[in-house]
Amino acid sequence: MLISCGGSGRRDDLVMATATSCGGADHLGALPDEILQHTLSFLPSRETVRTSLLARRWRHQSKSAPALRITGFEPFETARQINDFVNHLIALRNRTPLHACEIPAYKEYEDDGEPHHDNSDRDEPFRYTDLWIRYAMSCHVRLLRLSNHDPDDLDAQHESMYIQRVLLLAPIASRHLTTLELDGVAFWREYPLDLSSCPNLETAKMNRCSSLIDVNISSRSVRCLCITHYHFYSYQEKPRALIYVPSLVYLELTGGRGLVPSFESMPLLQTACIKFDWTSTREDNNDGFLLLGRLSDATNLELISEPQALSFRKDLMRCTAFSKLKTLSLNDWCVEPDFGPLLHFLQRSPSLEKLCLRLSKPDEHAKETDGSYVSTEPFLASKHLRVVNIRCQANDERVHKILKVMVAYGVPHEQINVKEGNWSSEGSYADSEQSDYSYSDTDESD
Image (cartoon, rainbow, N blue to C red; front, top):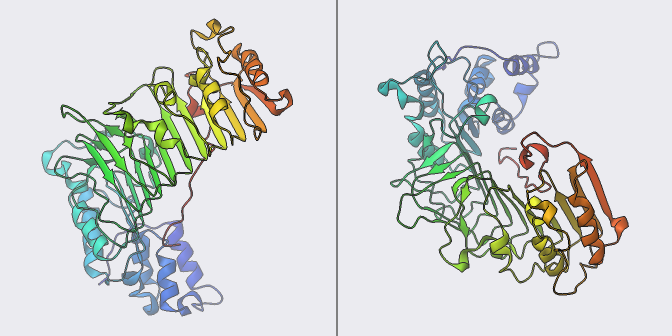
C-alpha cells in the first residue's frame, strides 16, 4: 500500500535523479538494503515514502528506514491530515529499531492567519503525541525530538514561549534512549519529567519548556544538560526546582523565567554557561543548593547576568576556591560597584589562564568606584593567566579602572587586550556575543 501525501521538493527530485542517472542504470538502488535504509533515514518521512515510486527495488525500503522525521508540513492543509499520514506510516512500518525520531506539532491557521479556537480542533495537533512517543520507545529509539512546531519553520523557532505547547503525557522510559530534545513542551502535575528510567541517556536539551509544578529532574547518566528559555513556576507553598545529575560534564542554563533550578553535587562538571535575565527568580531552600558552589570544580565558566537580574554575588562570597578553573567569561556584574566579584575570582582561581570581560552598559554606580577596588588581602593573580580580553563600548570609563586593578594584582599590561565596539540598543549580551563554550553531539542516525 502506498501512502500518498502529495507535493514535491528538491530533495525528491534529487533522489529520483540519483537513482536513474548514468544512462538509466539504478546504481543507488543496487546497494544493499541496510545502506539504502540508512540513506533514507536522513530524509523527512514524507519524502522517504515517496521513494517507493522509484522502482520495484525501492517499494518497501521506506518501511525499514531507521528514522522517523515528521517534518515538512507544506503539503498538508490540516493537523488531521498529518496525523492520518503518521498513523498510517506507523501502521505499515516494520519493527526496525529507530536511531532517531522527530515529532513536531502542526499548527492550525484560519484564512486570516489566526490560530483555530474551536475546541474540537484545538487539541488535534497534539492528539497522537502520546501514541507516537510510546511507539518510538517500543522501537528502541536512541534520539527523540519532541517540539511544538515544524523544525523546517524557522520563524516558529523564535515564537513566544506562551504559544500552545505540547503536553508531555507519555513517560520517557527506555534503556536505549541516549539523546532527548524537547522544544515547547509543558510538564504538569500529573505528568512530570522523569528521566530516572533512562539509564543510558547522555544528552538532554530543553528549550522553551514550561512547568507549573515543582521541577524535579533526576538522572545518573546525563552528561550534557541544556535548559534554555525555560518557564518554571510552581504554586506550591515552597516552590522547588531541583536537578540531580551527578555525571554532568556540560551545563547550559540561559534565558529563563521563574525559578532558577537548584543543583545537587556535580563533581565531574567541566564547562558551564549560565545567563540570567531580569525575569529569573530563585527560592533558596538552604545553603546546600547555592548555584556557584556547585560550579566551583568546573574548568570553564561563563557567568552572565543583566543588571536587573538576581546576582551571583551572594553565592560567590560563599565559594572558597575555583581550583580547576582555566577559562572565565563575565560581564558587568563582576565590576560594579566595587570590583569585588572580579577580585574574588582573581584571588581564588590559581589555575586561571584566560579571562574575558564583556561590558555593555555602565551601571549608575560605576562612577562611584574610585579607590574601592583595593583588596583588604594582598595577593597576586594566577601565574598561569596569559590572556585578558575586555570587550566594551567606546569610551567606557570603567576600562581604565579595570586596567589599574589588573596591573595592581600582578597581570602584566601587555597581556590585556581591549576591544571597543557597538552593542545593541538594549545592551543585551545575548544579542551581541556568542558563547565561548558549546557542546556538540552527533545525530545517532549519522
